[in-house]
Amino acid sequence: MKKFFVLMLSIVVVLTSCKESTTEPPPNKTSSDYFPNSNGNYYFYNIFISDSTGSQSGEKKTYYNGDTTLQQTPYQIEVDSFNINGIQSVSKSFFRKSNTGVFYFVDIDTNAFNSIIPDSLRGAISFDQEYRLLYQPFKLYQTWPVYKVSVNYLSIQFDVLTIDAKVINKNTIDLTLNDSTITKEVFTIRYTAYLTSDLNPPQVIYGANGFIAEGIGFIMWDGYSEMINFLSGSNFYLPNSYVNEKLYSYKSL
Image (cartoon, rainbow, N blue to C red; front, side, top):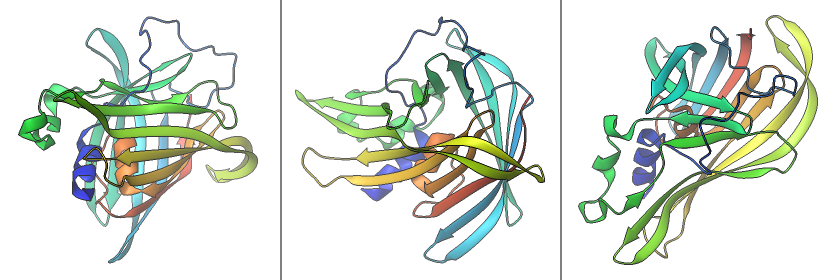
């Protein structure tokens, strides 16, 4: 079952909770902004990975590079490049930002999602083409559904995978970034994934915390590789490992 979940998280990056209209007005620039999204923004993270065999370290760079339209909806392009022990990888994802949150998109037709669904269940899976990374405006203990995959087979319906988010903490802290110290308001968001492959088995649960700062964006990720791969839309981190990504430099236009 864990292998099934790893594949699910690695490939399915089309998660949503509550789908909204894509024609709503742009975000209110006068309110606090926890996800600056100007093209040209970049973020450098130190990476630390540990598993049963030991640990590794490296770097990740994230930047926003232009715009595109997918299924008549405008998106921005995010590029993530990884470098660990000289091994490099680059991935792209597509997101849009609205007054109520941040949503990411992946085209199901271009990935291998269907290949991991048993033949008996193909055609019985229901899912959307976006996942909701953030719900705005933030407040302490705010919760929201991130994504759900459901099966309706022979009149029996159950959720194969659900991911939920909750704001669990809010602090004003000092951050060392760009070789200087700044004070920022930071929210901690707990993302939890629940996997079931049958009607009544024990669930497999994975989680990760995202730390997000006003005027900057995500300053740290900490948790299971399966969850972080899923939310970032990449396949970079190996299964059954624990990942920490910590921001050390950024530019926000």
